[in-house]
Image 1: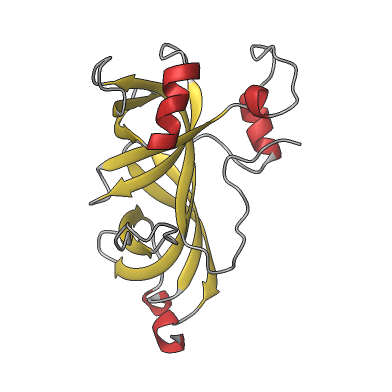
Image 2 (image 1 turned 30 degrees about the vertical axis):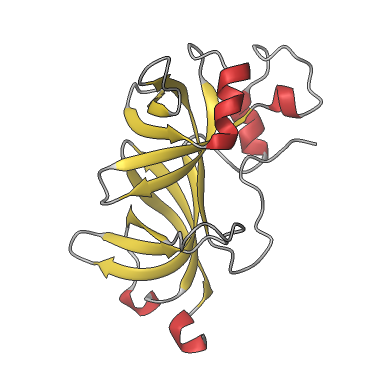
Length: 199
């Protein structure tokens, strides 16, 4: 069974922002492995931090000279400055029953089998702002916090694309493609309209 780097949602109104990018992670320094840049196949650099659970993977299993498929959480303040948080690494050889010769297997074909591709992001949340002039919109994401010590972790993402003003305050599920430091809309599915009225 091939492990999906972006699992299917368990709840129709599940908020999330998660993606997969192929590239090399370059830390700021060998002493500070948790901050650096993800450099993609086009040599574009994206500011990146490594979350705790992925840090031990990087320390133990990762050759920083090689490209990997990174499972990442996106953050941005506007449509031009993407930041990433590395949550994990998608490696079918270590996680599934595949023969170990990774050079012969086509990762992008495996991703296609899962209806995914490099630079794909799944974003689910509430549409809170539409800028028709700039052709961009803002999604508010409210992740479920399991830890009581963490404060409200709601955040917003600015995405390039056009959505109708009529969809404001609807819960939407978006297929997104990363283009450089921008997130661009491919497809939108409205899961529930007018969340504010229903609450």
